[in-house]
Length: 431
Image (tube, rainbow, N blue to C red):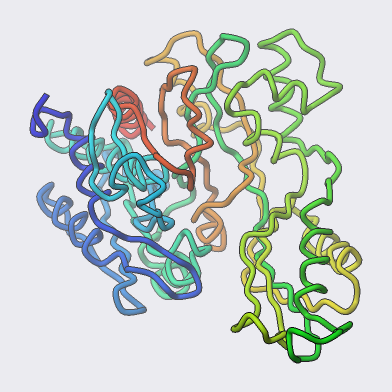
């Protein structure tokens, strides 16, 4: 199949992947401007009037409003982010920014997180407008910068400075939900109705600088290493919420297995096991170390970054416990902190998402779950907009989809993208 023969949703996702929008965090990023301009040009081609907001050079956000048939209904925000985490090309089987299609898959950084959904949004709206139709209600299409840095230079600034973009909106849909998993050889869909809170912390150890050859009992590197090891080896207890209990009930109904051991029940979900188990507890993963500048110099200071994800409402308790784990000699600095959230698995939008999936994959159950990571829905919540994860994908049973978020050889089946576009188009036409 030639490149031009690929379905439009695949071509758009491929084009977006080819923009290197790598976000290293802390303000270091390639920037989203070219990708945002591509999205804006596509929206203009549909007769819409995109608006841009670039509060920081090259960190570009773009929005367009699509008039609905019934403007008296609250508007729905349909949003994605245009940045991606970095990719080390030497680790990949393909060029991570080539947008290559092979073996029925679209490969590249962003194929899963989340240029696939960006393309589904654009082409779903295109299907509706090109048919001379309108969505049921007004849609606010938003494409944010900096989500992979917690939205600090993206959605957080947009909701603060341009709340008018979201006037009249009460609900939102975005990434990391609506995809299928296989549980004991039976397919089910996970619909995201909550997110753990994100706390990115920096551990700082201080000691006395000196020559690397001497006896030295005040070594910042040793102190940091002990603290990082202590955190990395901490096993946080299971603590269920209303959403994770509902998830376990859904898995139990599918498998006939007991809910008594949540980890064992999650194991029935195959490659999604690790993704689901992380939602039952706090996770604290060391992700970066910084210390020293020469082989024979003991540094005065050593630092580590820890990615902390906690259940909603437990943020302060976890920070206090982390201080106990590392001891008073280690300074804990909070780099980024945002909220967790949970929403009941009910209401007209939830019903409409479930029904849309059911029309395209009849008889397959839809189960609520709590996302262990975070999305830009948290920023929208500050405007009173309730967000869900709904990027619908019917996936092969053996594909480790959740493992490819920020992973190597990120890829998504072409057929899954086409399925997702159809389901999303159906939802936007009818809800």
